[in-house]
Length: 241
Ligand SMILES: [Fe+2]
Ligand SMILES: [Fe+2]
Image 1 (tube, helix red, strand yellow):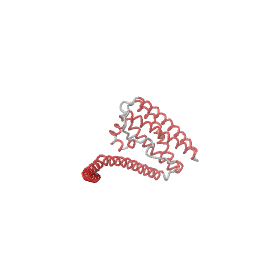
Image 2 (tube, rainbow, N blue to C red):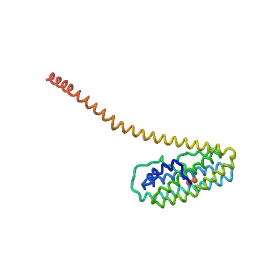
Image 3 (cartoon, rainbow, N blue to C red):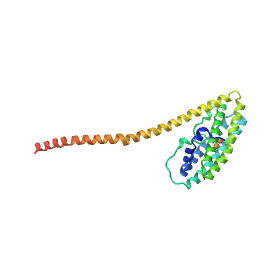
Image 4 (cartoon, helix red, strand yellow):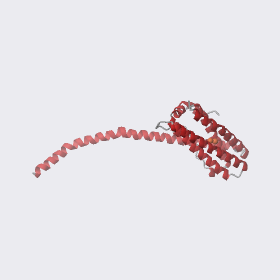
């Protein structure tokens, strides 16, 4: 599976993201959550479908995702046990399999669901291939991705062939719609990340630039008021005694 052009351009960044073992462990834990979540969605899809073949495929897919979740969880624990603390997390740059998407199985038609799944699996396969290549000497994590990728290739191909079976005329449209939906969610995610960064920058600028100016002005005002206050106080004292 070939990673997307954007991912290939961002490869040095991905390498940096995966370099720190603590960050790597946390990332694997989040992947475990995403895979488990995907497994639950697929088991719900199996319950809802009226198509016996799709039911079988969804169930197998769901079991695969649960197994992936366990593989990621076990590996994350191993990595974290050996890791030292590091604080910086770059979650928005490395989403998991369906990290960019919140799937609503109940509200999605069968063909739209298959198109969505196909694109998600394709994106995941591309990402996991890239992660394999930036993991340096971490052979254990690379092996986890290698094992999972075999299943992702199957998920990618069955979702595509089943979409062609149940919606032969609308398959192109459904894929286009799913792609547009993913792009929109990517944009929202990036916009949210950017807004959060800008918010932090503005708050820090206020704290370090504007607050000292107000403090200085307050001190000057206090200095200006001080002699008058002393004078007034002095005259009061004189009149009293
Ligand atoms: Fe998976
Ligand atoms: Fe998958």
